[in-house]
Image 1 (cartoon, one colour):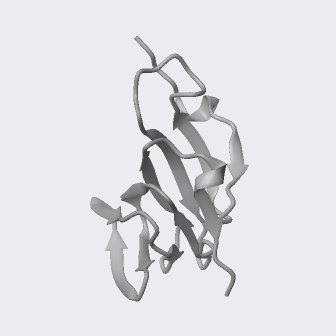
Image 2 (cartoon, rainbow, N blue to C red):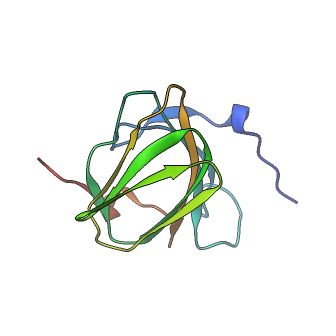
Length: 121
């Protein structure tokens, strides 16, 4: 059995500027999974940097409200909303609420730095 508590995960600033805590990654624990799972936070009034992943990603919004941007589409998101982000899509999310926007990010196959590209404006 493997159990990891969020408060025991190191908080870091991700390449896109979000506040991230990695919960599960197959290269960082003896887990037979192909995906990575992270808890992500974007402060009120902030947004992540536009970026692309070579892999697919899913956001599951747990708290807050925001505006999700994928390529040339934008749509409102809030708690209990899941978003599928296709590989190679330019994406970013902005927090439009008055509190932290918190969501889970699932990347499959598991996130790797070399698979992410920050898109210059």
